[in-house]
Image 1 (cartoon, rainbow, N blue to C red):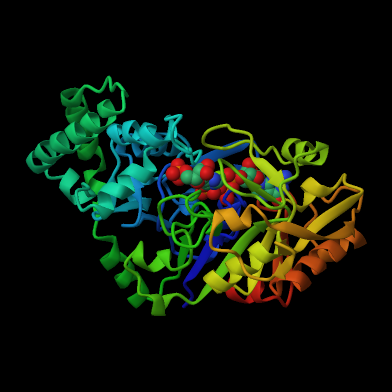
Image 2 (image 1 turned 180 degrees about the vertical axis):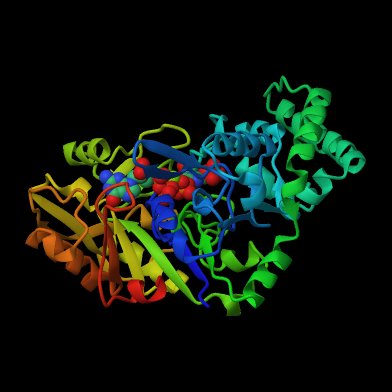
Length: 434
Ligand code: GDP
Ligand code: IMO
Ligand code: MG
């Protein structure tokens, strides 16, 4: 039996959707463990494109069970929109999707509360997705949140949600943010949504425990990325959940002892959306080239993603926290046109070379990358699926990333589609995904 976590090793958008979809055939259950509809996981199958936000990326494989774990914050209206799109594409949502009765319910008034910090000129904006994710997790930690099981309890839900929304509206008004929220209309809309979702809600921790007893394989799909993790990321420029591997246990109820391996996903370069320090950011024409070739625009908000070069200290930090020994290097094809490619091999802060990730964003903002220049390959790698067919310089580039991080690149992605993938034979990646 093998239960594996796939997660973003950088600041999100590494290509998790593609990889989870690619590997889903080897697993029986695909499980999201944190985040909400701030995530946007893209899957391209021929002409068809899916951007999944709450539903795990394995749902496109008939017969697989997709689970929304207790660690998520779920906007029921966003979820219904997503399930309708999946049904229209022929997915058997009723059979394949299950939602934890302990997941938190996200309300429109959470978005209102988010404006207090994000739209207030007197405060430093994080540059969030404005989906209400942070305020919903705040209510969870403040022990006043509403969970899916409460949502299905018609009377209890109506009473508590009125109180919670009133609190949100009062808070927002104190900052001059006007609401325009019709509480009663929303209560009715949410109650209607609850009836539609009722058949899908259950105690998913027991479902997964039973699945493991039956020898089924579980694939945990991380959202966001390690550097956006609430504890380990570039705080406060992070999301409000545990994107690291540890979250796979708390966010699902699957004990840590049952998780066998972790795979990190990293772009061949790096991007970030929103604010916060970014030591290897390319603010020149090469950054624009990456953005255009890599179509680096947010799949949720459409914002241009900030682009930069592969950051080895960051990747090593990520491997340490998550315990992965193999990684998938995605979007190698995006670098095809470059003459030479910088890689950040280390940081210098205040004249000292350091090998660890500093704890504060103030220190990280001072980090000067120690660059290594690698030759470009100046030819197309798009769609190549065999290691030996990659140009020499592209192989050298990947090998250098392995050397400088100490992590195997067991798989390389050369395009958004399933078959545009190099799986390296004899690799740890091959062994754990068999
Ligand atoms: P996720 O959030 O980690 O699932 O990633 P996103 O879906 O937000 O962003 C990744 C984008 O890159 C999507 O548009 C994918 O279709 C695309 N993509 C994934 N792998 C590759 C690749 O190897 N090459 C190229 N050119 N695009 C890729
Ligand atoms: P996937 O799963 C990239 C970023 C936001 C912002 C910070 C906090 O597709 O990789 P939030 O709305 O979560 O409170 O925003 O986190 N962010 C992401 N960046 N990919 C994502 O998800 C992200 N989800 C949140 O841009 O900087
Ligand atoms: Mg994304």
